[in-house]
Length: 401
Ligand code: PLP
Image (cartoon, rainbow, N blue to C red; front, side):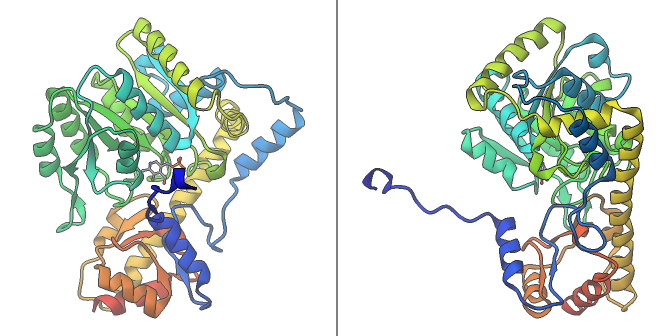
């Protein structure tokens, strides 16, 4: 035990801590708005019908359980790259992408950033939006990759701070890396508009900064996977050699299957081949080769036209439920004559809403109303249902007026 005696206690995970507290609460009115996973209108985890069907198809095919290739199966990696980059991506046409299967979005980020620490020829420094998903800085710390913040969210408007972001980008060292949430920004739900993406692309290009897109919610923002890939595709068209982390946790409800992908767009095939050789060596030393089950499900859905159609409507259904809950929540608060403005609830997009609630108001929501959310005032709109929306609206109204 003395060998481990110097290990200090680490802080508990904030989000998981909220779920623990929620579970302990015995009040029947309790609501969990902390969890970052989709729930149906009955508050239950949702199995997508397209996923169910894909699983049946796979089961009936009696497949074996041999190892996958180190980078994952090509039927998977080709399909997921096409989903993100689109039918007419120059990189896919010219085969200048390097795409590997990863352990969901987190694994793609970790692998991509660790690759940076070893092989990147630019400035090994990552710029994160302020605020961002808590695991981004944590991953950087774990691999000793310096990270800094650029302005993103404007608390005054509850919207995107375009001028602040552009100003900060122009101060980034040439060759450093900027992390961008491709859509449905977590935790704020604030995305740049198409015109704003165009400006960002230009400033980032002028500054010679490398964009790394984190796309954990393709389809979850607008309900349409092509719309949600707008920024990624625009940046490719504009000539950026982007890095891209994809996750199928949310848009296919495959959370625990841990299926995702990491893509590098390279200047030519030779560079792509060299990159692939090095990513494979890295993968080999971490987990040898990826898990097959989740990737088979994703591959079956994306490569089978009928299942693909089914999935697109499954995604839309989830996004639509979230959009309608945003509207009901806003109406519920404003309808009670609340003195504040609540347009940001419907302006923001995706799973999360950054309500602007202050820490003391959040505390009151939890203590008096048994509603659980993070201290920064972020709520998971997926936790709201037709049954509890009125109760949540009433509670928010009471703590803010
Ligand atoms: N990136 C962002 C911004 C996220 O919100 C999440 C999940 O909450 C992820 C990445 C990765 O999730 P996973 O590893 O489950 O795919």
